[in-house]
Amino acid sequence: MKKAIIGKKLGMTQIFDEKGNVIPVTVIEAGPCVVAQKKTVEKDGYDALQLGYMDVKEKHLNKPEIGHFAAAGVAAKKHLKEFRLDDCSAYNVGDTISVDTFAAGDKVDVTGITKGRGYTGAIKRWNLHKLRMTHGVGPVHRQSGSMGVIDPARIFKNKKMAGQYGNEQVTILNLKVVKIDTENNLIAIKGAIPGAKDGIVFVRESIKA
Figure (tube, rainbow, N blue to C red):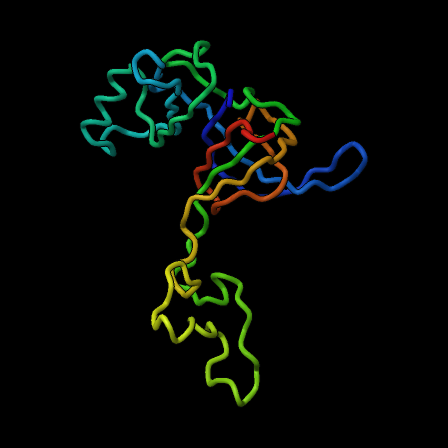
């Protein structure tokens, strides 16, 4: 991975290409991000950059966070994320990374937190099949079927059951960058990405492209 950036999901729209085809895209307000920390193989055992995104007042941070930004000599940021890059020699603490790091046609991986759906049943959570809608089966039809066998008389781990659904980190791989707007710090990526509107997402160069 050679490049990455932090952004905010704005929503979905559509773009027409030169042939008139409709391309559904997700618009992300990406950057500008500041390099808050640089890690090297000699000192830390690996190469990485810690990026900061969105200005924030110091009264919303604790003392260790304030000291971290003060030591780096950069303005306080609301979001921090570390990215392991193949080569960090071109960057220094205090440098700014903007959306023009990417270009149309690039393949990227996007990470975000999915929408939380609370406690849901197995039908919605795992897309299980409903029970037969007859009088012989019931009175509940939207529930799991058999939980297992008589021997051993217990439910095995990882059984798909009702529970918390959503509000988890998900990464979508190999998405295509359709358009870059450097003036407004916008990047349009083909398809849907995880998260709700105004959710924070991490865009990085695809590791499997």
